[in-house]
Image (cartoon, rainbow, N blue to C red):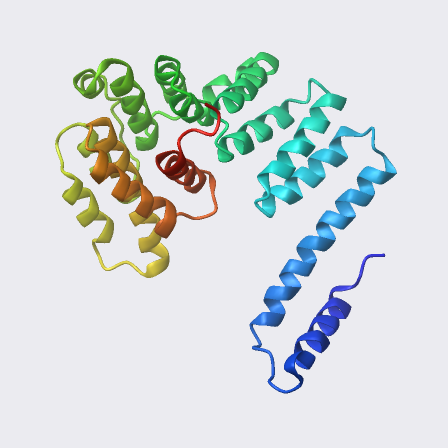
Length: 282
């Protein structure tokens, strides 16, 4: 039975009010507990849909999406895998599983899923910048560079695309070659992307990037993503230059202090995990 939200809230309030028999529970604990209860109920509903029709691949996709929201990526991968077993041509399952395999540090398996997606949908190839990042971490630097060159055809002014292309070329052929082949960009207005591009071009310093990120006294909600991208790309740049200590400092700051629960935040966390523990798919 699906429990109505108000009834769940009442149960939670009664439970927290009786703890220790005296002190009132903090008011913030009720919404937090209710949110967790709602997440649990989403899993329950999704599981009931699977029980009702276990041969339908889409019900596994549905529960996998719930697990994604909960950031339970091992469970989402299991459900995407079941969906693929039932429907081997279900291209969206390869896309989503490839992303979650990357989050789990399984870079080679992630690349394999993105490759399968391109096999099924060749028209999606230029859009798969996620594949380029997975190739970088899988050590397939030349293929990664080609993916970012392809992505340029549909997203020509993305500084991040230019940066990842640089990083792949730097690992494959050296920093000088990477700088010479840096993809030019125009119009990426995100702060501090202009300074990040200048850094990779050899026309700015890490200090310039960090200064630009904090310029204008931005509110905390604006400053956080600025500092995330600043630390992430300064860290990646320093790593390509062989400055291991500086790279680690910046990447860990990006991953542990400034990252949001989005894909690039997960890229930073995956990199931090490699720095600490080595690759998951050795």
